[in-house]
Image (tube, rainbow, N blue to C red; front, side, top):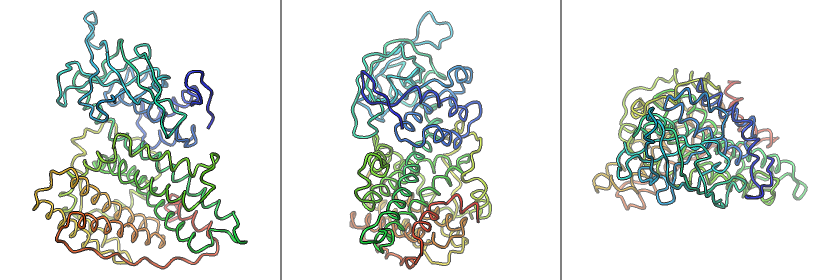
Length: 514
């Protein structure tokens, strides 16, 4: 999209263009909260350009602190302003409880809402051009517990000494470090900052994952179109068996990624909000990186052109899961669900879930995700995984019960060695849970579309889960049996590869058609 020449920062985003679109985006945040609607509105304005979409998301999420704290008067007053997430500091990264920024109450303020904020923030998007900053600071600098941080709305006039930090990705954004030394407004109550951030964080994970999904949605069709039009040795490369096989595999993975995201949205206004959100921010975003990188390799030299989004998206996509290790943190968060996930015995309501997916997936609806207390989403109603898959009546046997049994056996072996508190194994088990849930998503993808080609997506994801379990067993030298891979169904013979592959990517259209 269009960038401008700035005398101080060079080639950057047109922040006036960003500001012009923010009001429409924020109309989906307040007074009603429509999680999908806000993302679709951002796409309409900024056409999925990674730099603009990231700047829009940063501003929208920072504004969301006002709604999460139920500061509705201020939310109405400041809607349409550019905000920034002024949370991280160079010495802390995502360890927000260790921030050093300090907030001192202004003695002449009878309302108790005005503070003087001092500190330095680092690697902040929109910071130089923002009207307001969502700042995390401490009233008591020595405090370290969950009640140690508070959130403030700090105007641009209270910031100074901006220094741009050049990055390898999203180069037209302006990320800076800067000092804060001036007044700010307390959001919510003192010491309740973490509670506000948790309310924001649950739906915000969906916003971040959306960009990864849209990069895949944009890049893979571009690769298919290019390889279906280009001619080598008098033929389209998409018709070469090796190229078609790779594109077929990528299309199935991309379809699963797309469905998994919108499936999570369909269930987001429920206790599954947190569980699906942390899976999107880790497993799904890493999978997007993998798909985009493989897509660049398959496409070849076309992907290196600046005019092509194929290579640019492959590079830019790494910022979303990798920034300060968010994918690691979210996978570690999943570990606490492991036992309940693997040992759930309640039957899942098959018809209700499928009906919800058919009716709600890809449909923007108002909800209460921003106000869900994390206590309500810490115990999602898991159900008997393998029994649910059996009732889906797959025409192939993916041995779901064996996957669950092997996962339980691995968890028991880790406990026997007293390794359950080791971050390495908490992370690995979190990955197992995410992969199991991705198998379930693949089964539901096949079920709601009634497209037999997606059976290979199920088999591919089941094999990925087996491969992961085998790797953990091998790396830890556990005395556990390895799992053999399942045979995929034969590669389809098609007359029109382009049409066939693009249809595989159109999950939304197939759900509507089914």
